[in-house]
Length: 345
Image 1 (cartoon, rainbow, N blue to C red):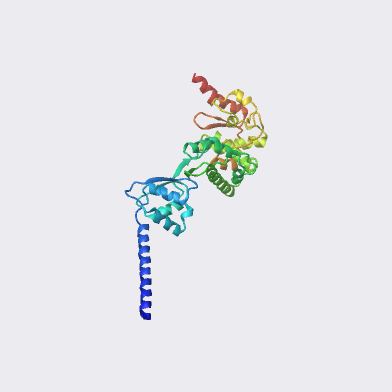
Image 2: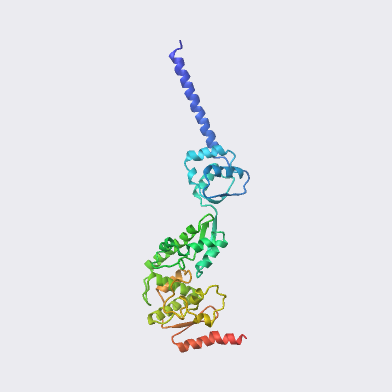
């Protein structure tokens, strides 16, 4: 018969052995977790498709020679509880990272981003074409979203019929895997934030009282008509004066917006052909914005210059000549438009 001391001693030895084994395993896992994921120092690109599960991603990483112990990596990631938070996209991974840094990057980064600038005055079609050129979405999907009700609501502008006017001009950094809906939401939310800021900071002064939708339409016209920053509030003043007096806007860019496949040559026939956007034949503002205006044009629409001008004409150097009367305007047209054209023949 064995003595109790020997029995207890055996159990204690087994427990100590088990604890030592667990300690060694833990130290080994910590060592593996902190090892570099690859060899060399050249970044490696890996693309994770939407819907990929964690095991598929681990296999991709192994094929890219970024992890040498995929089973241990997957085990530790699942133990960490972050394996279900992977982001889709294209990632640039540094082989000098350890496994913890790799996992952190895959769950917290949105992947490589594309820098894209939307200048002031582009139409929706021009702005989305620029996105497509950068590999951000498909043209047909952007066309489908042009009248999307949820996106129009996101803009905060009541009465908006399309997304024209609410793609805010700015430089954006966009994850390559972003959907068309996500990209437009980003830009429209930026518009909404800026417009709210403008309304809070800039009281309406002078000119005709307009709704937010009308202000946006007017700002889009100002954006297209302006060649120099100094002229912007003056052009706004002309349009406000015309609205107040019940005069037609007579704005060439509105006519052009209403012409399908415009070839760059605006003719008298174009000016005389009625369309909803022809402000030579129709009274008031066009039914929608004609471009995506920036902050300065929105500000000018809200605070136009206090002037008595009713007309303006392009001088040919980017600036405009302003007139109070039709007679003055006709002289300016002759001086800056007709005469130079004749002399160039």
